[in-house]
Length: 123
Image (cartoon, rainbow, N blue to C red):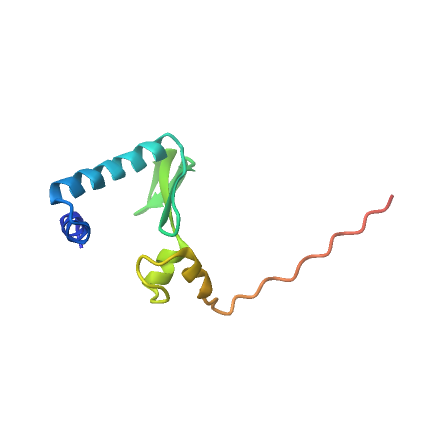
């Protein structure tokens, strides 16, 4: 599904014209990009959260050559629990966050390491 398909689907679902939906979609994307560029966190609960991260400068190997990679600001996106549940078929599309909480994600047998005891100190 590409942007045109999304515009068409939202237009049919809402009864708004495709031109209106396209303007809203483009405006939404631009608003999110501008906010993240300024370092703001943009959260769409249950869907996506957008933040800005920092990548430090580094030196890497590529095909036997040393390549310097400059520091950069990078966009980060994390997926909301409701969206994950919808993708996994555990909640209806457009469902609430409460529905997503009823079906927690299964862990793949991951066990926590035992806590280390603090070393005794003499006074």
